[in-house]
Amino acid sequence: MKKSEVLKIIHPLAEEAASSLGYEIVDIDFVKGKKHDLLSIFIYKKDGIDLDDCTEMSRIINTKLDEIDFLENPYYLEISSPGLDRPLKTKDDYRRNLGNEVDVKLFAPLDDSKVKKFTGILSDYDEENIYLNIDADNNTIKTIPIKSISTMKQTIKF
Image (tube, rainbow, N blue to C red; front, side, top):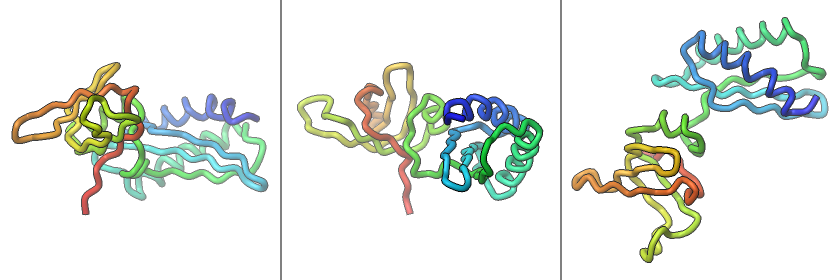
């Protein structure tokens, strides 16, 4: 069975399970292996994901997979949080990171400044742009077209 076919079956099951537990699905991946396949489901909740959350989600998904028994090969099920260093790519990623500091790298500078990297608070977004507060003291908002973004990640400070 192709990856796209597996994901088409898994996605609604995972969405239903996540919703019942108060989580969101961030991503689902399926990788065919030589002996075992790997099904990875990444979940999110505002207060963070812990081991108990992963265990509960795993229990529900395993039960559902056993009921429909459609995977051809033995598989490993991996449930985890997406991690702080994961690139932000979707509108849901933007929504989950509103008010957070992010690092944005561009494919090319937007103007004559030659600046291709910005750090600031993700203050808003729409269909075409993100709005980054790059100077909180002066409330300086930089409008960045989404199509110009090479990568955007949550800023990690130690």
